[in-house]
Length: 608
Image (tube, rainbow, N blue to C red):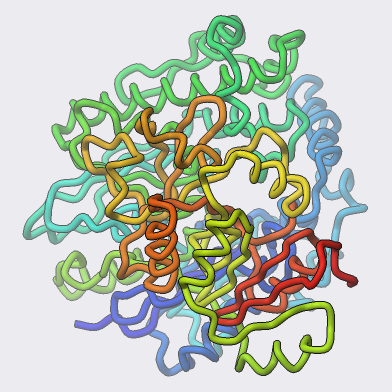
């Protein structure tokens, strides 16, 4: 039984396209990588164009196109809320839209309020121009099917919308290595198709039912609470939550306890349900009032602790209730690696896997998985035998470098030294000597985490490297930690991981071995010494592994500092031209493109 080509589409927050061919995920990339606009909301035209050209997808090879989410939000699309809104726009939304509606019972037109944000140059232009003149919010969800069918030139019957949390659940399970054994599947986010948390299960061997939902709720508000705290602390919601998570460990429990009590007085976990101890009229304005006067770091520490406590209790209760001790997680809240680490520590959890980048960009993959599952079940075939786990997140375009001569010819008389066929040993020596090297090699990673192919790499033992990367290259907030990439033979040396939880995609936080922290301290959180590791096996990325192997020969350390190759506020680079832009417009001194090493001849920022 084959599924042929199934296309998965996430169209909205961080629009993304994925290709599932005969049950294997072979391509996935977000539109932002092409448009260079963070969290691009437009139809993933360029992403789909690349997939179709690269893999020869035609209307004749496509068996189904799956659109993630039953409902679409026309107003957010017209205003490009997730792409174009600034912090002041989000505050305006709260104060001039939600406050009058919730507290004064006034009717407020969202599109009238944000008419300055409306754009009609989205794809397809004729459709969006008609919506600008006469919006049809109720019809937009279904209109997407016709738009997609026309794009591919296929019959509309091949296009289907798949419920939001079903996509999250399918991604969480089918993307994991777990098969043929009972498993609980958790999804948690701010909101999607009327829900914000679900639990599903697969029964194990000879399971013909696929992913079966056994619990759902629209009343689990921690995703929204975290979003509002991000905004109240002056950061951009739906984008900068990771900054709040990075800030939280600096807070001390003795100081954040009062703020924690504010959160605990709202929602609590009872069994599998979330109930209000005291239900506020609105979460944003409630916390704005009741946290007034609390210091910023204490708020961050308190909300992080609150989220961890809620998720740990909820997960523990579910594991006990259903007597299943193997779990997977997805949804935007699953991006909270500290919470995932706490869940992994639960005595009732025996095995755990968190697939890469479980926010809404992964819905494209989940939608394709779910469409494939339905097709297989319709034929009375077991999906577990055909849908293959995700083994690699290197699912995007390659560097686009046709030959080393492209770079050599362009720069040999300029301000760069260009070396072809550079060895792993040479790169390892430069890193060991304290140099910072940007690496753009092979296929780009899907998702929010750079996994070595679109990364900035450095020696992890030297904390002096951290401010250099922060100030001269990334322009990122000083409190934010970096992450380590660790080769397999050194996982136990650096990571406290008694259950051997496998985290190849930087999705779980771990404590670190105290006596070995000095060797990797630049890649740890400075406040609590935790790590968000990329656990690297040789087969996953042989070229990166070879560099690290040579680095260990020199230094004795099988770990490098790893952070994404991009300028602050921009998506991770897509190809070597994007990488060159970052190289030229930062203080980076070395850029490795495939096997070509580029070095600035002086220590000054190169001319644009």
